[in-house]
Amino acid sequence: MRTAYSVQTVRAAETELMARLPQGALMQRAAAGLAAACADLLGRVYGARVVLLVGSGDNGGDALYAGARLARRGAGVWAVPLGARIHEGGLAALLGAGGQVADDPFEVLAGAELVLDGITGIGGHGGLRPDAVPVARAARGSNAVVVAVDLPSGVEADSGEVRGEALRADATVTFGTYKQGLLIDPAKEYAGTVRLVGIGLEAHLPSVPDIEALQHADVAQLLPMPTGESDKYRRGVVGVVAGSARYPGAAVLAVAGALRGGAGAVRYVGHAAEAVIARFPEALVHGGPPSKAGRVQAWVVGPGLGEDLDVVQDVLDSDVPVLVDADGLRPLDPSALRDRAAPTLLTPHAGEAAALLGMPREEVESARLASVRELAARYGATVLLKGSTTLVAAPDEGRSPVRVNPMGTPWLATAGSGDVLSGLAGSLLAAGLEARDAGSVAAYLHGLAARHALTDGAPITAYEVAGALRSAWRDVRESG
Ligand SMILES: NC(=O)C1=CN([C@@H]2O[C@H](COP(=O)(O)OP(=O)(O)OC[C@H]3O[C@@H](n4cnc5c(N)ncnc54)[C@H](O)[C@@H]3O)[C@@H](O)[C@H]2O)[C@@H](O)CC1
Ligand SMILES: Nc1ncnc2c1ncn2[C@@H]1O[C@H](COP(=O)(O)OP(=O)(O)O)[C@@H](O)[C@H]1O
Ligand SMILES: [K+]
Image (cartoon, rainbow, N blue to C red; front, side, top):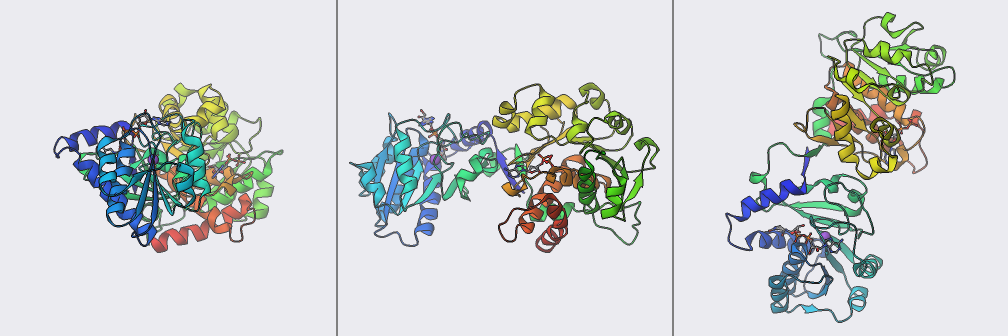
């Protein structure tokens, strides 16, 4: 599991730790780890040309002390000050080690092999300031490897937003713990390869992180596996209420996902039975209302329903877990959902989430983490918010971390891929996973399947993503 903490939590842990250490010791630990990572990236330090972009806070201090260490090992190091102030101890250390302040930032950047971006870290807000922008662009435009100190400068550490311009790094060296933004797009994309350097913070962080991302091994442990005792009913039956005369394809795609999620059987209910059976003879089909379709262990309702929304209430009246997606999200009543005894899992994209919250879509997109938490609290349901970074929050007032999906590709932004995801997640619910696990495991497998389907760099279809779910399972099981 990869875990991350909010800035507030990181600062509290740092304060606790710093109280036990001599003044400046923590920054020296960070700088030592940073310098070692730079030496690794450079291959050789002696004679290397290194430029430090130095903001006015401690992030700049880290860069200066790391630069001093590299200068002592024979690198040529130039500092480019970018704030009203500069970390005085760090600057003295750099100058004492033979480093210099650059006369012309653009000239030193043109010849740099490595740029350390120490403009802002966890204290930065609102994108790069105007004076830093041309320098950051020159750094990115040079041939140098750009290494971000703690975080790429210009990104919001907590939300992962990029509100103005930010400096895209090839690698980020982060201290003590991942920051939330390093796991959430778009900031995540600006970070490049992230390396975590220990500074002794771990013991001072709460045991429950603010957010977490499943890795292969975690998913492998959560996958439902049949045993000698299993039969198709014990493995779980998932009911899929999807599709309409107008949108039969949504039913086919949701069933395709459901068949590969580990449930023992898929029961389809709706007006697209013919299309479903034509593709999947193994599906059980039913034309009447869901409540008369026979026992299931979980329902999926919504994809491609169009206007036929009475079935949503029929399904929500059941006493089993229910996943609501797409059109099914329109008629939801928060208080009725909160009163359900069995778990509910909602899977909106940003537009649907905005409608559920009664706010503009852009607000959801710029504050995805806050939005998913708010939705979970308001609707008393687990919420999977889809998008470039999919987030899953439980309705437990922050007791469990928000799961962030680390797996995927922008090629998933293709019609119908959400239908596959809802079938898959519903199948995992029917197989007995808790809603937060079902949602996050489904998002992971779905993203991994898309990567597998993307063999030749050409666009993928939702149906191909469903087809690649088997190889995603295999991949997770083999390396988990
Ligand atoms: N507290 C500590 O002992 C440690 C702190 N560490 C470093 O300290 C950093 C946090 O330091 P600070 O709290 O000083 O904050 P930062 O250095 O991240 O940034 C704050 C400074 O940047 C300015 N600033 C804010 N937004 C800006 C923008 N958009 N453009 C330009 N300047 C902007 C502010 O005016 C302030 O002076 C961490 O990210 C990490 O790199 C590490 O050395 C580990 C130990
Ligand atoms: N930029 C992106 N990067 C990665 N995944 C994305 C991106 N945009 C969308 N997705 C994923 O693609 C799927 C689209 O689902 P959805 O919006 O419901 O589409 P549809 O309704 O057409 O099925 C979701 O799993 C979502 O997380
Ligand atoms: K930085």
